[in-house]
Image: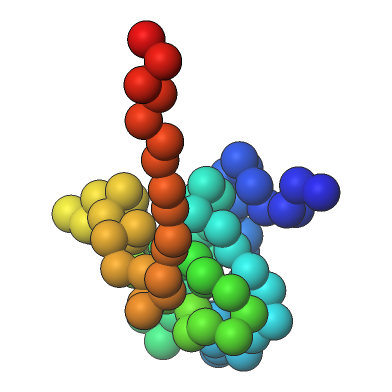
Length: 104
């Protein structure tokens, strides 16, 4: 069965005082998904866009800044490339194998 978030792009808007960690406590967000949250900060009116992923429900939510929009219309994009999120697997171990075909 394919994961609900696989091969998708999500932009979700939530209230500024909502905790991302609590909201996504039991949800897996796979690597092949771009999951972005937009939150408005009530005091300043700025909107922060945060990307996130989670290796497993037992792992900590990983977040990174994508952009910030200000009430004056200015937008500041992060210099953190989306592809760098996969550089840290939070201690997860991946096992692999390959077979050399010597019949040729």
